[in-house]
Amino acid sequence: MPRDIESTDTQPLVNNPYSSSSGGGQINTQTLFDKAYRIAVFGGSIYILHTWEVYATVHRSPKVQHEWFKVGLAASIAVLFVKAYVELFAGKIKKQTVNYKNFRQSTHAIMFLVLLASISFHVALWPAYEWQTLAIMTLFGYGVLLQFGLLVPTYVQNIVGFVLMTFFIQEYV
Image 1 (tube, rainbow, N blue to C red):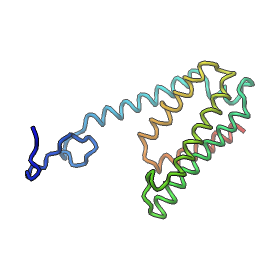
Image 2 (image 1 turned 90 degrees about the horizontal axis):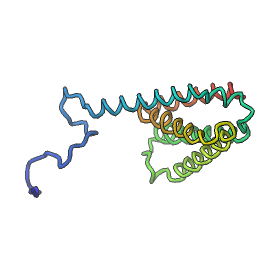
Image 3 (image 1 turned 45 degrees about the vertical axis):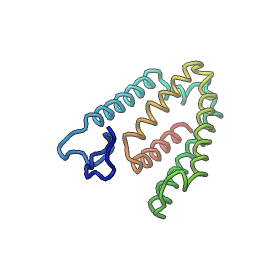
Image 4 (image 1 turned 30 degrees about the vertical axis):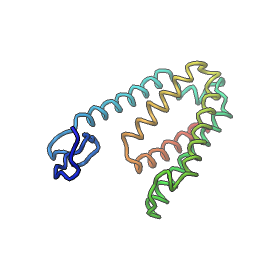
């Protein structure tokens, strides 16, 4: 049924779950299920990585190619620095709008660094885990990093990323 353009009806054509104009006392069950799903995937991924003893293997196994792992760590640190620059310095201090149009070079740099880190970690872990490396990287990338990024605000991501990366580097080196 076509709508009259001059109609005073202000009902949206589609239900937008991200709209803040929903009823005051209503709990959005979709958001609740989304968060429960993210927490379940996050917890399950950490549990599987723990049962496979990935952390201990990365630290102690002579099968892990540690030179490649260090390249992946360096790329990950660079991603954190570019992310912090864009979000904190340019976004908060300089009050620039953070979007692709304003930060094309930073976006492409992050894409390259994530690709470099992914390839480096795959090469580093392959001798120790072989085909299981694909599952480990998927569990860590999708199950841990992505779910954490969708659950937690960016300022918490930056703090936790800095603290955990500092801790891991101290333990690793």
